[in-house]
Image (cartoon, rainbow, N blue to C red):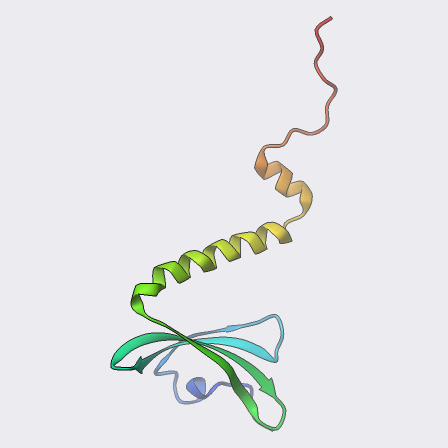
Length: 108
């Protein structure tokens, strides 16, 4: 019934910084800037698609400027952990410098 576009995308995205589509077509995270209590803050919106309604915001998290560095650090750590888990076990061993099984060198 409704196109899968968020309100900010339809209205030219004036306040939307970026929308990150998830692996699923029925949920996404929208990042935008908004005025909140007299200050400009970053707003993270978790949105889900509902047939008949369109995109519905389930949760909004507002991040003030002094929290952005910590948020960036936390997201970077999470991304590295996810990539590490997704990598095949053989490539993880290679990155850590693990040596393949070889016979021990003995003193005879």
